[in-house]
Image 1: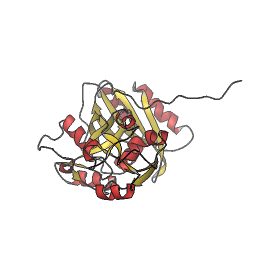
Image 2: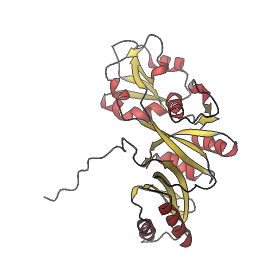
Image 3: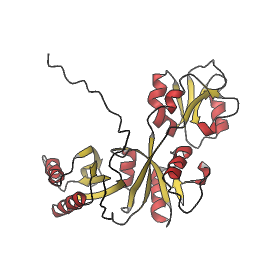
Image 4: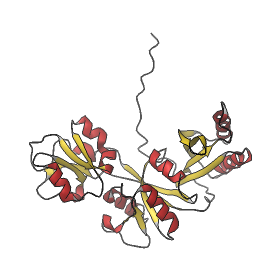
Length: 289
């Protein structure tokens, strides 16, 4: 069985599940065929408890994970991991009854997460609604001159795409992952992306430097590193990196354990290059003039 959290777009999660052949024991025809497992925390807890149930989650990007998912995974059952990822084309469209628009656009949480930059660039004024909001209620909220952002399969009768809608569907693909219980990551002999959380035993000046030295000694080049306050101590850290086989990961885990650094693998996803890559920033550094 496959399920998703209520914050996910059913159409995109379904596309990822079908593209990745994650539905090996069932036929998925409609988004409703994916079980709605509630909020992300509840969804992960349910996946960890029910045998044969796996979750489909938006992951951000394999090399730059969504921070909400990172945190939720670390706070969930220790057996849960992201085990596969798929990039699916955006199915979002911007639609309205006519061409006279007031800029007011009704969009749910998933649509806002995926399209907020394009909508703001186009001058829209988003009205955020829960993902469970029925389509009829969204149409009523939009009013006569408002508009909607919905998946292409859910465009209501009488609505057509408005100018600027193509910017939503032409954006970079959306990455979704398969989350399931894996008692211990198995060894592998092909390239993979790894998500690792760790917390230095003693959080003091230089403790992160010492931990990162272990990463370097294992021959690992971090692509992503983020800190988060921890209830068990000042900080935990989330990292993402690529390894050619499981050997560097195995060596790093042994070194972390030897030095008393708490750690947990949150994901192992087969693959060497995940294109397109994470959104890049064009830095403007402090002027030296």
